[in-house]
Image (cartoon, rainbow, N blue to C red):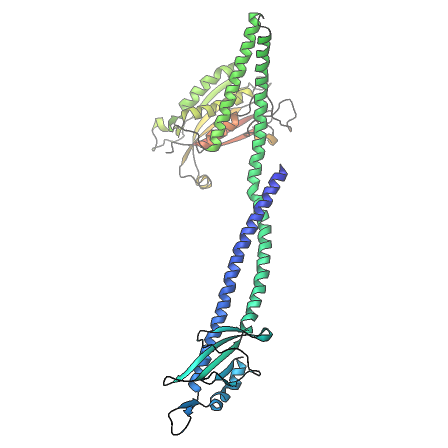
Length: 462
């Protein structure tokens, strides 16, 4: 099964990396075209500026004294700007109205048709040369005097673009590798709860199967015996039926417990919220459990601690009330008291075995209120204390786990799940406490007893 989780983790990491790589690629393409277009626009602006400057500096003079025809004095117009243009890597060409080249700053005139284009054009020449050009038509009195072509080398674009491309490739590669490593790490964190939940579910299924298998096998055996010997003595048949009836009740309780925990896990437990007098509820629970305690020779008592000072905000009848479900709270304290009775016997030499239940109203300190993020000032605290054999420290972190029990026949350091009882009582108790927005803790010392402490909000509205 670890291979399955490793495979899932790899797929998650690959998905993280692939999605990030696609997003980075889209971002890089956007940056590439933005920077490229920005550089081209800058070159076009430079060329247009040069065209405007040269156009204003053209020397136009009459072609003959007796005519009104004018022309451009090429030598006077261009020679004065040659040195300045070379510094900017800009080349000029002048064409007559018949589109014949008259003057150029190129060492070798380029063989490319003249295309009047004021918006800029990228021209691919021989020898892998690329230039950006603007062609301006020069007119006077609606008569064409010539054409001015301004060229800028393309390496002013390719050089920074190539550098940007290299930087983007390196950056994206490093980012993808980093995201891959981070994705592997995060996928491990993401899948860890799933793996833990699966392990718990697997253990829960195995334990539930174990708890169900034995009663079902026993029932099946007794039914087969009854069918195989229909003429058996009535006493034997009655005994077999009693066994089947007892095991059926046990299976019913186990199924109900499993159903309750499943609903609690899904958050669909239906709670009938009402005002519950906790003192009256505990009295009823203790009366129900008194027979079981008496049969084991245990002293079962309830101690209700009266508040030391009078509370003006409460009526006497409302001091020990909570908002909750009577049946669920009754089940909670029944489980705790029954658990204490089960693990306490009357074999202690120095003291009588007993189970004591204590109910007290406690005032929260400001520090406790901040820690619990609570706005209430009071809580009800119920302690169920026995002086039985206690619980080993190594078992305390697992005491509320489902199907977890401590085997009394083994050393205190070894705990196992035993078939004697389902081991769901404390898990149900914890679920009920959490549904009522309370807390449950346990303290225990070997051979000295155990104390379960339940705190519930006092009269808090739901």
